[in-house]
Image (cartoon, rainbow, N blue to C red):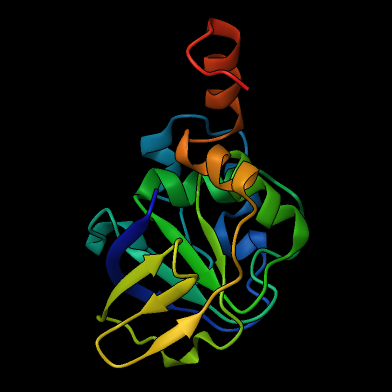
Length: 167
């Protein structure tokens, strides 16, 4: 994966916790279509109704703090978020994102990205670009990028077990 391109669909503040991303009352829901209907419900009711898949979410510091529930990442993927860019992530959310194949991009100064702008995440150049800014991002080690490219840790494991992927 060399790059991702999408539109910034929302810009969130600091300390967005997992209850705001995916409320606890829906933790037993397993159908991705239903999960998508509750993504970011704690911030914007019915976020999914106006959402076009492929968007990029931008946030401040400590995105995904709170519980380590994997459903927060799963709901963002289900609604069609293709990447999350934030100044920093809660450690468990960051790992859950990678493990589920959702690019979670650390861009310390992402305040220059605005809602509605087209965003290019360049993994080779370690940058995020819009029409007006170029911002540095923390590079992924190759093994983490490999997990994301394969759609998550489970998918990579299946490829290894089946012999389609060689370590």
